[in-house]
Structures are given as structure tokens and as C-alpha cells.
Image (cartoon, rainbow, N blue to C red):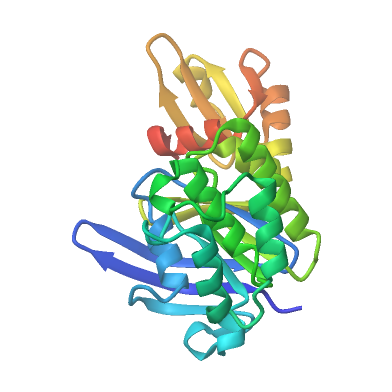
Length: 285
């Protein structure tokens, strides 16, 4: 089966920033967590995917170049950008009426059921909503027009932990259909760890890795000890070194081999946040 989203040699340059030769593939039934520090290029990538900015390279969705998608196919892309993009004077009821005229496969019953489930009043104006309520509305709308691909930019930002978990459950339900996929960009790495099948990390506009989450969980590790000892680790294993006040820590890609070869070093499993911090703040090997 063809990839739902394919990016080939994506390039975009601004003054002081360059997104350089990015290649990605998101397969049916897959959730890709998309991480990187602020300014790494995540939002530029998403805007390029959606055709909101001009770029070099090719983006294909559902096997077609984005510019060749039909109206129906465009309606099968659910989008949540950072922040709410519905006009403040509108009520939720009016938003529903507008969206029903935009999307060919609008699901009114599902929209209303989700609004009730998450406590969104239909007759209140959006300007009275909290940040979290506005984000809920954006997510509910994205899930209510028979989308096959969700593109989410910080979708759980501004939500309390309980509601975040409920939203992750919605995304999990969505992905049970193996023809669906999610591109999930977030700085909340614990959310990525809960739902992603694959993690893609970009740093300073360049792809650092795109790997199954299980590989990161099972193989990557943090080593702690003297710098002189850490630097003895084979360069194929050692990805980054982070100097600290008294000791040093390193990021390795095969922690069990390192643990066996360097018994004096403390080697532990690495969280996604630790992996990202080491590669952003550390000295890459």
C-alpha cells in the first residue's frame, strides 16, 4: 500500500534558517511523532505539506502531489494548527454550520456528540473560551469530516493532563482504522511516547533520525561518567556528549553492548526527552 504522506527532498530557506533536504514517509495505520526544538523546522514542514508556503521538493498525499488533490481528497485531511483559527465572534453552533458547507463528508452527529462529551457549549461565542476549550474545538472539528490523515501541530498544548489523555484516546480510536495515519508534532514528549509508532526528530532544519519508537525505547541509552571514559565508546555507538558540572553524559544507540563493554559506566534507558535534549544541547559525534 502506498504511503499516505511522502516528502522528498523538501527545502525551504528563510533569512537565518534553512530546512534542508527533508525526506519522510508516513504509512497507513501509523502515528509519526514529529519532534525538535523551537525553530527546528517542524511548523515550516507542516505548512509546506499543507501548501501554505512555497518550497522546493515534492510532497505527496494519498499518492498524489498535493496540488493535484481533488476537493474530496483535501477534505480527508484533518488539520489542527497551534492555536484556534475560528473567529472569536462565532458560536460553536455557527462553526458547525460553516464547516458542514465546506467539507463534502461532514459528520454533524459525530461533531455534536464530541462537543457534548468534552463540555463545549454550542451557543457560547468562541471569544469566551479558554485556550484549552479552543484547542478541543479544533481537534473535534478535525475529527468530524471523515479524515484519513490527521496533521496535528501541538494539539495537546494548553490542555490539562486529564483532557490530554482523553484527546490521545480519540487519536488512538482514529488510528484503529488501518487506512488512517497521524503526523503528530508536539513538544510534550510524553504524549509522543504514548501514541507514536515512529519518531522523527529534526534539529536546525535537518533530519536527525526517523525510527520506530520501539527501537529508541529498546536500544538507545544514557551513559554517565567521566568524559575520558565516555569518549572511549565506539563512534558508531556514541551519538552525543553533554558536558555537565561534575561528570558527563552521553547518548548511545546500543546501550546493552555499551553496558557490557564499559562496566564502569552507568548506562540507563533513555526517554524521548533525554534523547532530544542530548542531541540539541550536546556535542554531536
